[in-house]
Amino acid sequence: MKAPPFAYARPRSLSEAFALLEAHGEGAKVLAGGQSLLAALNLRLSTPEILIDITRIPELASIRAAGGTVQIGALTTHAEIERSREVARHLPLLAQAAPHIAHVAIRNAGTLGGSLAMADPTAEWPACCVALDAKFVVAAKAGQRRVKARDFFKGVYASDLHANEILTGVEFPVSGAPHRSAFLELARRRGDYAIVGVAAAAKLENGALSDVRLAYLGAGATPVLARKAMAALEGKRASPEVQAAAAWALAHDLSPTSDIYSTSATKLHLARVLTGRALTALAS
View 1 (cartoon, helix red, strand yellow):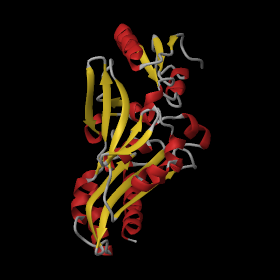
View 2: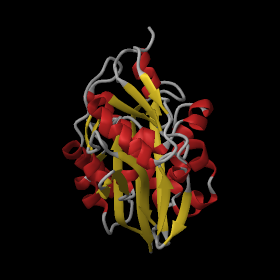
View 3: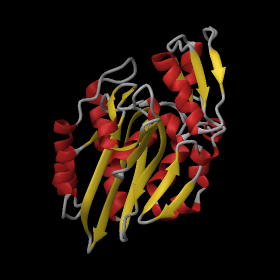
View 4: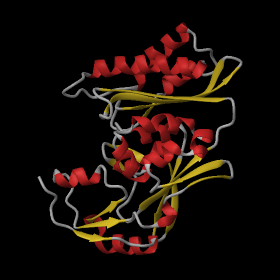
């Protein structure tokens, strides 16, 4: 199947992009990498009047550490994040998650902002952003606003992004040592969408976990922050008994939907398995 006909524009600045969005409203789609959008066009799942290609706006592709945060521009590719020394140093969870994203060709072209704006609940970056308590920088002609990652995702392919807005970047708070992270997912084949996955982060002091974050992908309509499981772990050593308590609590945090490959019960079981592995990694 081929994409429906549409107009195409490649603005060179955000002001030009905002003017195009204002002129076309709901009929416009922003192209930031295209690895998900182009497939949706070919399947006729998206039928825009115009594609606004923002990939030539240079200020949207950067990785900077400053003022206690790491700021990553929306047009930064998955591969650039994967290779970044700043990311490896300050945000190891992102470095751990990046190799799980599709395949090398996709990672070379796909972007952080494109993935987040797509709001796919099986994608890696949304769960990582929720686990790291990131803030999204959203801009429009009238100005900027910042949205917490946990508030940005509203449902399957649904977000807090308005028709006249562009996601321009993400701000990650820099965590102090001794901080640990782990990213794990299960897929039918390497590079496939995850059946279920977990982005985990915590501080480890004197063998005890604190500031525990467990964010799951593929376990709901949005990334899910497992608050009850996190509470079961807070301030405790990752003993078998504590891990069992966290696994039990997941039944109250997660309600994954069955699909043609896996039942809800299977996904919950796999989430528990991954949680145990993640906790072992955090505590090691």
